[in-house]
Length: 327
Image (cartoon, rainbow, N blue to C red):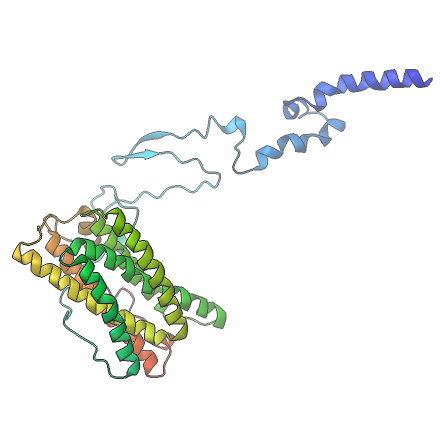
């Protein structure tokens, strides 16, 4: 066969294959064939391997659906992983409206706790912790004065930090040393979550101004890093500082209650989130909410002073069971 004839035959052959090899409908065109076309099928199907790019044939089946379920408006979620959204109801069968906490995380606060207890500074470390807290207290009092709602919101953005930092560092310590924590990781994270729920409650009653939000950014950044370093250097000092911070929180909420009783602050109805979280009566008021929050702070005070006492006496936290659920 001459060279010219061979070139013509190869060109004709490629023209015949071009629609098959380079067609966008390659996979449907060669699904039942074998041969050279099979080399190209992985390239054409590669896009459909991605979890972020659903198969076009499945788009109609996976369209988000909207409708009402259990009395609530819900939007369908398209997910490759097929994780069904949880549907939680109350004991009476009505829908649970909160995503930030679950019914089994609710509780009735123990308001019989002594809110006047105070840990007397007995050594240099205690005195350092006490006066550190006092130094931090006065600027906030000067800034907020009798604006209790705003003061409470800033207080909770700070109060939720120690439990998270302590729980995180104990978690890492447990991993490094291959040992349990005695439940203290969970106890400290419970404290952090409880403090965060205080903040979520106050946000239902008052919206922070832009400068208050800016202040939170600054204070939280400084406090988080400072407390982190303090806990790395001396956990017993860090827990003592937190204990004194909680004492000041108790005092702050006591002043809040006094002004509510005097009528200087409106005793508005309790927000729904507080009624469900603390299992309060439906007709509860702001005074009831502040009362249970103050009780929570008193329990956090005792827990952190207890943790510091354990370490001051030469023991480790893991050797003593943590008071889980101690709100």
